Image (cartoon, rainbow, N blue to C red):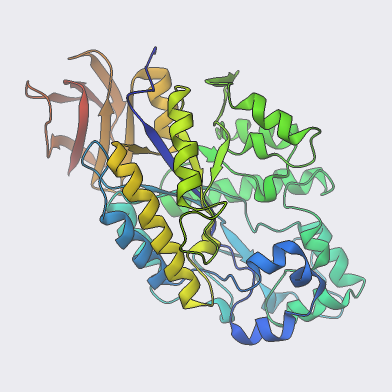
Amino acid sequence: MNLDWRPLKVVVLESDDWGMCAWVPDEQAFRILADGPAWRHPAGQIYGRSTLEHAADVARLVGVLKEYQGRDGLPPVWQANTVMGTPDFARLRAPLFECQTLPLLLYPEFPSRWQRPGLWEQVQGALEAGLWWPEFHGVMHLPQGAWLKALRRGATDARRAHEHQCFVCEAVEASAEYDAAEPAELRTRSLSIGAEHFLARFGRSPASLCAPDYRWDQRLESDAEALGVTIIQGEAEQAGRPFPRLRRALRLYRWPDVRGRRFYLPPRIAFEPRGQRDPATRLGAEAAHRSVRRAWSRGQPAVVSSHRVNYAHLDADWTESGRAALRELLGRLAGDGALFLTDAEVRSLLERGWSLRSLGERGALLRHYGPPRERLRFPAPAGAAGVSVRDAPGTAAPRLTMEGREVVAELDPGEYRLEWRST
């Protein structure tokens, strides 16, 4: 599909680390662990007091999204790259830490010190409202082999962290879940478990993958492709490759980037307030907004990266500053007439001129930017006996019919909120 991206002004809000039990569960753990080597490193200075999100963190973030509308009249959608599990610390015991495979609690189950009442219900509500869109960010965001080795050889920082249901330590920070140093079979198994649980939890398979810490190799991409996960995030930021600045500069002009079945997003634009409200900071709203406009001028979607650390933290003032900075950026983008999409919608529009995004069990968002009255076909969800349109922006009434398990749609260009009728 030969789509002109310049007038669309597309923005994708990618946000990593949701569902991850790190860095610390509570203030007590931070006070005890803060003198460890991982917390003294530069990453520790940024992430050291970050924590698993509470229900209130999601509610407040969603509240910010609701304050703004894109050019289509719809609020921004938050692509939450989600970690699908955490170690079951209670079943992993010192001093031998014996296990065939690492015991695992699957999202939204969490260890005792990481309990977050109401979190899953809050996420479900945001999903139904079309404001929250999970994609895959690993099983535990943890290099299992490196962590177990550190525990078993008695590394002081690893064992002390484990006592407080924390896996952050020097060995973990030196590697990543899909780092090539991890056993290949373990990486493949981890990816498969994560994708399987993603389907069970969210009712669909992941379409997009963001490798933890941007460390991965071609094996991960091949394994992901075999599972049907063919959108790769953060390729321009991939760690361990030579000439990173030159690579990123060259990737700015590589769009669209399709290699076989794999689809690569443009380089990410960092929006990381990190407790600062000032829009003029290096990673603040002004710099992000300028980079978004440059992406539009190149005829590309603008992919904005904003990690969970900005919105889930032990310091309430830090998270309030993050939300204030987000308001500043979203206000600028909404004023520009931005269109907020997910990775999967970007790919579908590029390839077909239309996209379909589920809004929970009862609805979907259909975007059509191709020729008027073009016939579109897409599968209906299980149990749907019919479909209707809540809003019709076109000049002619949309025509939707069911043929077996498929919907056939003829409509004018625009955005349509579909509602499924059950059997």
